[in-house]
Amino acid sequence: ITKDIDWLIEGIESAGMKLLDVTVVNRSDYSNDTDLLSKYPFIRVIEENDLRKEASNPSIGDADIVFSSARIPGDVIQIPIPMVQEDDPFFAIRYFTKAARRLMAPEEPGWRKDVVRP
Image (cartoon, rainbow, N blue to C red; front, side, top):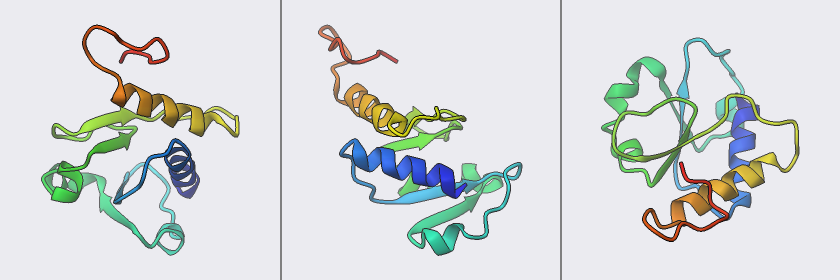
């Protein structure tokens, strides 16, 4: 899981976004990474079974953007992340730059040509 978090943090920061709060959902079918909190002491970990209850928590429910491979309950803007990333050192930067452009693009007439409409 630390590799996934490295990929996310690198891509988000390279796209010019700022991380204010990070929460990781510990999936029951995912290997437990005991090094996670020692490498990322600023990350809050919640269990997958507690996700619905935690979605009402202001740190998740009031987030500006959620990057997730699974749907998070609530009305927060969510950008899906691929389960398997391309084997390319610049994929994360391209992926999150595209996500940032999509968020800033107008939804009505005049969609920018460099933005892929969701």
